[in-house]
Length: 379
View 1 (cartoon, one colour):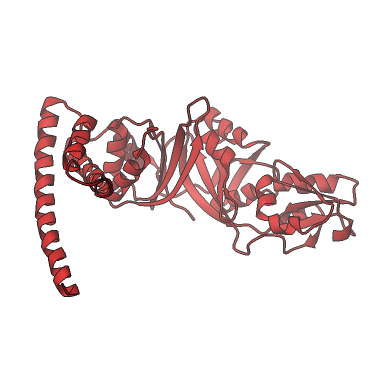
View 2 (cartoon, helix red, strand yellow):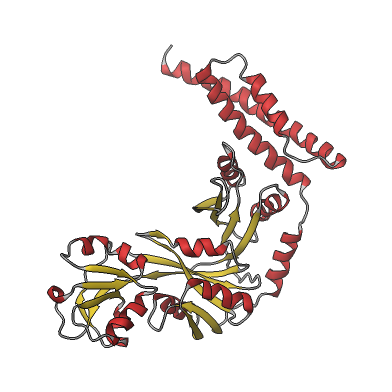
C-alpha cells in the first residue's frame, strides 16, 4: 500500500475511535449520575483491573502493554469527567473564595518580615524587591522563619526555594511539610556572587573560603580550580562576609554579594566565580493565613502520592486532562516511611479559572493526603 492509502486507513480508524470515545465518555457521565445518587466513589480499582484484563486478553505481550497504557489514560480522563459532575463546592474552595474577597487589592508596602541570615543576605534583597518599606527580622535558620510566621511574630516570611543552576533548596522543602503556611507571592532574584576578602588580600593569599552551601555549589568550577583551599559551609552568604570582616585573618575569603562587600568593608578579590552568568534564585513570600492578591496566576500544591506503580503518572495525567501546565515537580522522602515521597507541584493556573478550582475540588475529596499551598503571582 502507498503512504496515502495507509494514512486513509489511519483516518478511518481515528473516526471510529473518536465516535467510540465520545460514546464511552457519555456513558461514564451516566455512571457518575448513578454513583452520585447512590453515594458511590468515582474510583473503582477492581473494575479498572477487570477492564484491562478483558481488553488485553487476546493481545500479545508487547501490544498488551500499549493497550494497558491507553486504557490507563482513558480511565484518568473518565474519572476527571465524572468528578466534574459529582464534585460540588468543598470547604477548600469556599475558603479560597473567601480569601479572594477578603484580601486587599494591593500587595502591602509595609510589613514585619522574617528573613534568614543577616543584613546583606540575598533573602533581604528579595524582601526589598517585594516590599517598599519592610521591617525585617533576621533568623539564623530557615526554620526560624517558619516559626515566626506560625507564632504570629512576623506577618510575612521570605525563603529561597530554587536556584537556576544548583536546584532546589532541600531544607526549605522539608520544612514545608512541618509547618502550616500559605504562599502569597514569589520573586526571582539575579544572583551575583563575588569572592570577598579584607583590603589588601590577594587570591594567592587565600587558604579558606566560607559561604552558604547553595553559593558553594553555584561556584563549583571556580572552587575546583583553586589549590590547597579549604571550603567551609556557613548558614548564609552575608553571615560568611560578616565573619570574614570580623576576623583578623588575611587568608580568609567569602563567596557573597557586591552589597556585602560595601556593607562589611571587604574588597572583591574575584568577580567571575559563578558557574553561570544567568544565575537566578526563586524566593517565596509566606503568610500564616491564606491571602490571594489580584493577578494570582501560579498555584502550589503538596501531595503524598500513593506508593504504587503508575500513581504519579495518574496524578500528572489529572493535570493534563484539565489543561493545566505543570511547571515544577519536587520530591522529598518522608522520614520513617518505606520509600514514600511527598511531591510538590507548581502550576500555571489562575485561581479564577474553572479548571483550577475543579482540580482543587478533586484533590480535596480524593484519597491522597493533599495540601493547598496558595495562589500567587511571581515578580
